[in-house]
Image 1: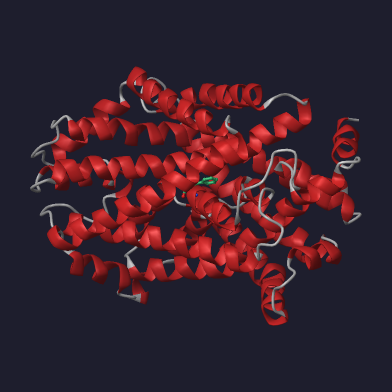
Image 2: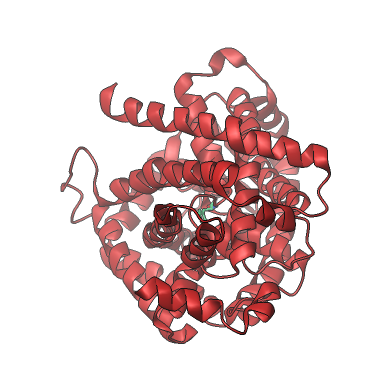
Length: 472
Ligand code: PHE
């Protein structure tokens, strides 16, 4: 039995060594874990999705619910994932298997690991396509082609990109190669060094853009928009979106954080560390929102409710009309690309780690197989914007389908299962070891959230989300 093989392989004589450091290695320090997890969390979700979803849902009220979800559902689930990962010190699939075996639980719980890795692979396939848009826009903005464009011209430029499969495939490929280049280097030299370099750079660029938006944009309108808690603007649907966004932005339910947890130093306090990551992630989302809305509100004729095109249509109009805007615009898209890059490597890593364990092959080969598969799958998303645009099943094109399947089906199910597993099934000893050093009050608070609050909230989101989609 294949599972038997893995189990023996990882629980042989080297088990003592693996306690501190799995076969894939470990982060150099707690700080590297924080950078890596923040790198995973901060991505297209913060810069592309958060502002437009907040914009379409009335701003402040949405932001309040979103932050509530991060704290009440996101943080506890993220802690649970890291806990399982660090206990197993392997890919999510095998860490989950180990947690299940150690708890003497039903083997079917292992589906959590599989769901996570599979979702990661599917997300990687379309994520790399969208990240490719951001890469393309660095050059498009720099070329000066967007100088002084109005909404219609910017929209035409965006459609031009989407309708050109070879241009999309080129950028998707470039992005995938960038990801492989990092992950092939392994945990310490590849991922570790990449996040330690990229994340500070990202923060510097973000602050630079923030200063620009304060000086040149309509900053007070942006603050008003994001922080005026007008509860009337809140709809049930907005609450659901806020919750889904909290999941996606923290990279939970997909194995990414479980995989990164497997490389976390044993002496790092999980609760404190995860709170820092969640704080960084939310701050980046809010700062991105402030930047984008300051610029949007300073440009007449552009609405915050623009939707997914907010970043690729509205922003170029705004940048194209401001002095120095093109340079700032190029920096903005470099920033988005870096954020997407440090997220995508966390989608690649769990799958690569699993393949290395399962097939006993080297990191380079595992990378090629996984990235190659995700790349081929990504072609489906590329074509869904042009030559396959008319092929729809139940109203979904290929890209919409993958987006919906992962974010609205796989992710909540896997998140729910994680809360139930850690809340009710996982052996107490494992929790005690991993949560050592946490005050009894905080531990009790976390356990209460993971047992009652998070699972019921996720269940409601899931049921309402699916109901909303198919029956309303
Ligand atoms: N959190 C990332 C973002 O906000 C997306 C992501 C999801 C990355 C799952 C890794 C795993 O863009």
